[in-house]
Each structure stands twice: as structure tokens, then as C-alpha cells.
Amino acid sequence: EDKVVQSPLSLVVHEGDTVTLNCSYEVTNFRSLLWYKQEKKAPTFLFMLTSSGIEKKSGRLSSILDKKELFSILNITATQTGDSAVYLCAVDGKNYKYIFGTGTRLKVSA
Amino acid sequence: SAVISQKPSRDICQRGTSLTIQCQVDSQVTMMFWYRQQPGQSLTLIATANQGSEATYESGFVIDKFPISRPNLTFSTLTVSNMSPEDSSIYLCSVARDRAEYEQYFGPGTRLTVT
Image (tube, rainbow over all chains, first blue to last red):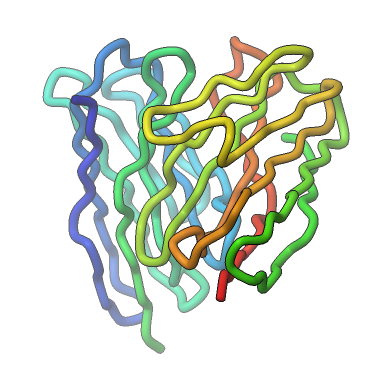
């Protein structure tokens, strides 16, 4: 059965800290891995990763994929209170279907 | 990315009634999807809305409970029928512009509470 596992489930850090969120997966017909940020209802797209070892970067956020070990990490440096959210990892597998992990709830305290 | 709107943004409904949720996109897209997010849970795909044909449902979801329409390439509806409190969730539509574009973009969601 296809599955996506995220860790940790929740995390509390202080402003300025660096955090690393983990996503491991077991799916058939892997096409891509995606990261989303969910603050209220709608997940907003962060990154899509298809190739191993190529870092995607956007401001203080970066992500990388390891297709051999079947995992990805999302790094956030110099965290701010606005980074508080649930971070979702999804894998695009067979027939364009996304399989989501349970998410990591990040709280950044001032 | 596409601009996606959903109506209603939230609703409180009585047990046994039905609610239709609308999803409108500002440009034509090939793929439209409907997801459910139950309280404290992650997103689960309900179905893929196919333009001009019946939706493709995931295991555990059936057309009688969640009928879906997709009359054109910019609009879809999801109906939650004969609701029970277990249907209380956030319902989200998402779109992908074409089959070569992997990333899906999500609408703002509909928060449904069934009493």
C-alpha cells in the first residue's frame, strides 16, 4: 500500500531557529514529491521535486529529494512567526493521484 | 498558477440534508480533483472530476454519497448527500493545468459542519 510518512508530527521552535522537516515515502510509479504549507484551509504550493540531489530554494525555505532512500527534507532557516503552519508532503504517484502525509505542525514562538 | 474560488466558504447543515460545493477556476484546466480533510487529519482524495464524463472515485467514496459534476473545463461541483456528523470536514478542490504539469493548486476550501 502506498504511504507517505512525515516527522515530526509537531514542533515548537523560537524565532530565528532552523528547522528540518522530514518526509519518507513508499509508492508505486513515483512522479514527483511536493511540499505545501497549510495555514487555514487551503494548502499553498511550495516546491515540487522530481530529481534526486537537486536543491530547490525559495528565500529561507529549501528542499531536497533522495530517490534512492525515498525521502525528502524541507528546511526553514531563520524561522519567523509567520512560518507557523502545517507543512504537508505529498507524492504524485499512479494516475496523477496525490498521497498526502499527515503533516508536521510547526509553531514558531516570538 | 490558477486562481480558484470555492463557494460556500463555510456552512452549518442539518443531518440528512445535502450541500453542493462549487469550484470555479479562472482558466481552463485539464484536471480537477476533490479532497476531504477531516478534523486533525491530512487530505484524502475523494475523486477526479472528468469533463463530460463520470467522475473517478477513490476507494471508500461512492457516487451516491458524493455526486460530482464537471460541465466544462473551468467549473465543478461536489455534493455531499444525506449528511451525517461524520461528514464534517474541510472540502477542497484542486486543479492541474494539464497532465504534464505535476503540481496541483488548491482552492480556499469549504468548512462543513453537520449537526
